[in-house]
Image (tube, rainbow over all chains, first blue to last red; front, side):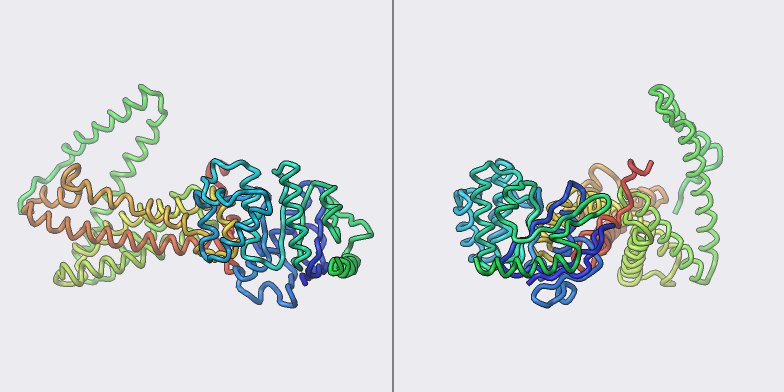
Length: 223
Length: 270
């Protein structure tokens, strides 16, 4: 279970909520309201006051690299540091095998792993980034616009993959501008607003969101 | 040793050459006349001053003054490293990193050259210590400032891919490994080029000076070879220390990339 306690992102009011295994939280709000900053803070990529617990262990109790292997952030615009994607998966053979499996789920051929990244389309690179984020099986997925650059067919496959991750017991925090997708995937919602944050009664503030989170998590578990 | 001493008239004649620079500046409207005047005067004043200071220090028996001048040289070199950064690490970090790196390798390099190789009598003879320290600092300064500049600029440009690696669970040194390699390579390039070109394209300054002062060319060459290896070794050490320290300064203990610790780019600051 992912538990957020009084997490402060910039000037936003502190965020507290619980997200059980096998449930999906959608973070909503206009551009600049702090959705990506929330995901980055959860992955401990930006300094933020407050606490984030995974199964009772606070993020500071473990080295940051260990935390990020469990709580995985996938940026909206994925960046690469190699010419092809395959070196990312070559560290351990099971990761490569899982990557090829996820690729086929997303409708891509395993050959794209060895194709020059610069020659792939934006959508192909985004799907590869999703594969990269999932291949070592993190516990929590922080997905920033995971289908933003995808055509409807690819987006549907990616959405199916995300739904499968939730069913497999992972927690997903999703930022998406696709309202229909949010409606299909989200068990809980968190509304961020700007400049004066006002949270709708259903999902916030603090304790309300926690309650909503736990109940949604139970629903998620029943699915 | 015999050499021709220069008098004031000789120097005045040499100073006429600055008129070429002034002519270029005027012809192409570079607007550099004022700057040229200032730097010429600065150069003459600085060199005249250091000449007098060195003459006075050479006359002293106590090594205290040698060490004092060495400390000033190191502090100035540290300042130079900082001021050459396009996006320098904010606060005390930039000056502290450059200065402590140069202090360390200045000590090691000079101690090695003086203590193990040249072994002058007395050991801390300013005539040996100060020129060797000066050459070590000058070359390491170039390497270190280039390396740190490359580190911060590349980290700034490659922010997204560095953070992608961090997000996948890479520790900071692994996430910055490509940036580190590029910075190290850039920092070592000048001394490598200097080694390749010396004797063919250029006669190194120190060797030229010794020959002008009447030293046997073969002896001068031996000194130059010592100096070249010394400079290569100390520059490499300095570049590695500065880049590793720089990585620590632009990241934190939670393995985050902290580009907020860089002062804004110069273009933005103006």
